[in-house]
Length: 132
Ligand code: CA
Image 1 (tube, protein in one colour):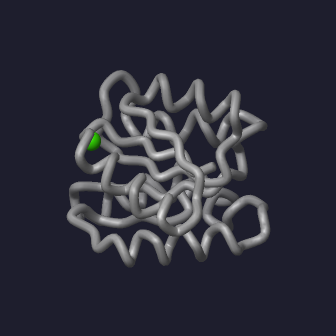
Image 2 (spheres, rainbow, N blue to C red; image 1 turned 90 degrees about the vertical axis):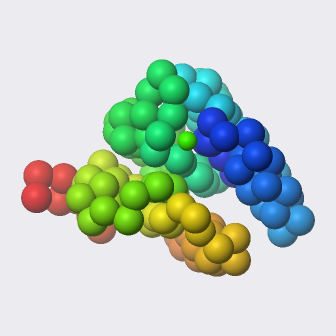
């Protein structure tokens, strides 16, 4: 199951539609707290995580997912509205595996999702250097 964390209903629906067309089961969470609950109880195979969210933002959620043993190695693709390098670096430091910048091409996001799901599980290289 792919957990789509996105508070904008249209964006969430579109993403869910394309993921399902490619054979993935999906869940959508429209805020950070709901996303955390679903992730901890259902352990998704991958999380697509928008940064700007109500309650818990994407960075905080990413940090919490990495800290919890059950979700520590679940691949996370961050979706950021900003093309800012600082956000991407912060995301990687917190354990995100990949990112796309809004507005993204659906084909690019799907390619990144497929790549991460083929990868054997394990901590990403960057999460080993969280103090950098
Ligand atoms: Ca958002």
